[in-house]
Image 1 (cartoon, one colour):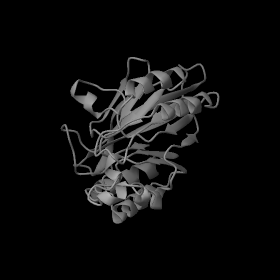
Image 2 (cartoon, one colour):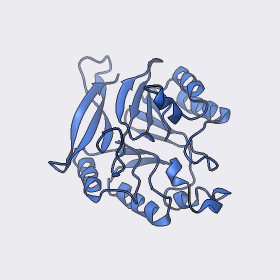
Image 3 (cartoon, one colour):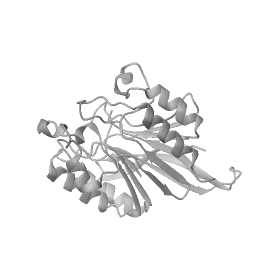
Image 4 (tube, one colour):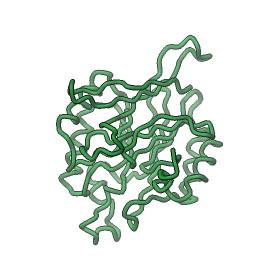
Length: 258
């Protein structure tokens, strides 16, 4: 399950409960959260986010910070202590690797303490992630997740990309990446990008900070038996949107992504 932009402190408890019901019903083996767990990076908001993620009862989690997870009003913490409150709940591992079944996920931190909103990638980060992708186990599907979107859908969307995004996409695609997960824009969508890499942009999962006319949204990746695949297993990405009438998430799109 790919979630993003939880924004605890600006969250909807009813939507939070609906996500937890869906995660338990599926059930979910891995949860990936691509940043903005909180609205204002307070200790209480991080505690709320941590409690929510534990309630999904996934066997594995990969949680990244977003720009909202760096203190804004406690500006003095940006000098050396920017990730202190995040780390209290989720540890100091800014970039990590997790595997669940056929999915091999590499997380990369695009936030910077000195930037309020925009993200960045260093040459060292790009090379490091490429090396991790090259080590993906045979048969596993290599995925990279970060907070800021790497592939724009339109001219306006280009402003959301981190510095060196184009270089990163080209390098990681050459290293074997098959999908990119991101958030930040609160504008959900699944698409196949020009380099031949699938892109999953999650909307805001549980926040009332909705944008672009999009509802609360999340993405679920699955593998299942498939006679059309040479391996006998097919991979799918499904977008789930929150439906106020039923009070639950409903699948609104499902794509084969092999």
